[in-house]
Every structure is written in C-alpha cells, then in structure tokens.
Amino acid sequence: MIAIEHLSKRFKTAAGKDHLALSDINLELQSGEFVSIIGPSGCGKSTLLYMIGGFVPASDGKILIDGRPVTGPGPDRGPVFQEFALFAWKTVLQNIAYGLRLQGKSKPEAEERARVLLRMVGLERFANFYPKELSGGMKQRVAIARTLAYNPEILLMDEPFGALDAHTRTHLQRDLLRIWEEHRKTVLFVTHSVEEAVYLSDRVIVMAAGPGRIARIIPIELERPRQRSELMFDRRYQEYITEIEGMIDAFEAAAA
Image 1: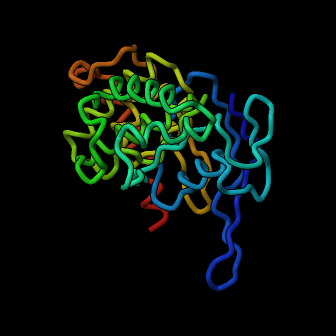
Image 2: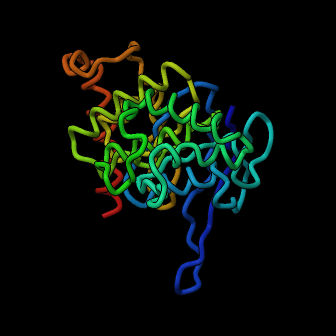
C-alpha cells in the first residue's frame, strides 16, 4: 500500500545551513499492517510521518500510496497526533461529525455515524460534553473517532498516547488494537516506548540519527490477539524489548 523510495529531507537551519534530517529511506507497508517507528530523539520519526501525510514535501525520493505519488494531504490518510486538536466550542458529537459534514453528509447522517464511533471508543454517554470537560484519555478517544469518521485507509499516529498517564495509556493501547483488529486499517505509529511498539506492531522500524535513517526492521512474531498479561511471561516478548532498547541505547551513546 505504501512504498517509500530513496526518501531524503533537508531543512535550512536558523543559521542558513543545510541540515539532512532523513537520508535514503526505503520502506514498504502492506495493506492492514501495523508498523511502529522508534528511535532516539532527532532521528526524524515524526518528519517521516508528516511526509507520508503530505504535510512536509520530500527533498529527494518519493512516496507512493497504491502506486500514486503523495503530493499533499488526502482523505486516504488520517492523522492522529499527541495534541488532540479538538474544537473547544463544539461538543464531542459535533467534533466527530465535523469532517463528515465537510464531505457533504447530511447532519442526521453525520451524527448517526458519529454515534456509532462514540460507541466504538466507549464514549456514548459523553456525546454532548465539551472537550474541556474530558480527561486526556477521553480527548484522545474523541480524536481517534474523529479520524475514523471519514474512513481513511491509513492511520498516521504520532505519539498519540505520549502525554497520558501509564494506566490510561495501557487502556488506549488495548482499545486501539481492538479497533484495528475489527477494521484492519494500515497503521504507522510513532512512539518513544519500546514496550508499546512491541505490544502493538507487526513490525518495528528502528531508526538511527545523524542523519535519520532506518537501522533495522524487526518483525514481531507474536500471536494475535495479544493480551499484555500473557505477554509479560512470554520470553520472546522480553527479548524483542531488550534487543530494541539495546540498539537505541547504542545509538544514543554513539551520538553523545
């Protein structure tokens, strides 16, 4: 579904010098695959995600989705970022229905679809609440539902649970896997948490910095559906985490 070929990105620094943020990225994602990107700070994880989303142009190389080059944002890609970016003046139901209304759906049709998604993320009782009345985890559930509302083929998730407490984060990881298993969207998920990447993913892409590049692609050969309580006693699960953490520690030590 997604093919990235010899992709590079250069930025101008404040001093006017060229900075190579990403170098020669080559990657393929299959339809319905859940892939996480992890690596040290400054390796270009989020930049790569924004480029796939069409928000940042490539300096070299290309990104193809179903054989078509990415030239900008599109409805086939749904972003979910750490900042919830909800409309403060709209209710939860109105936030989720907003994109559908822009697509020309009638108000009743958009709200019916929004209510289905609210049930999916466990927030049906909060349809008429405003964002300021919600917890961080609830806001992120609304953000996910709003993205799913217009049915993108690809979810681009940039540390969506990074600002949440550990308990809420664990619950949202479980909810995300449940939604993914039901709908099998293609997911590209950026995270700083090795455990999160291993728990969620079919493959984990480990990036190195200076410039950002793919160091390893690790298939996660753990059965699905996954239960964290069972994985904690799975030797392979622990080995994946230890291996990836060791690689990132080595990259950070080399950059110090």
